[in-house]
Length: 69
Image (spheres, helix red, strand yellow):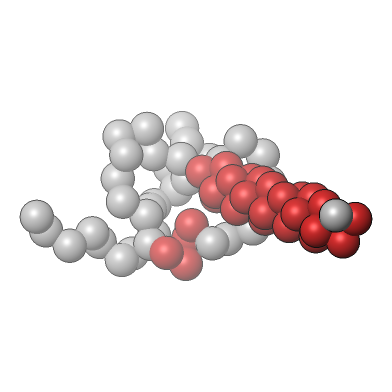
């Protein structure tokens, strides 16, 4: 399997946000960009923040139950 191209995707006129429906690999710096709207970058941050919130919520729940037991 060939290594993914580290260069960011070119932005075309028909895809102004840089979204590539063909699934071309995107560089890590491009995936970590803070972009708003329905972009792959926003979906990645949404997932990261959802996991952070879930982890914090479960941790608080566990600590409260241990403290009151």
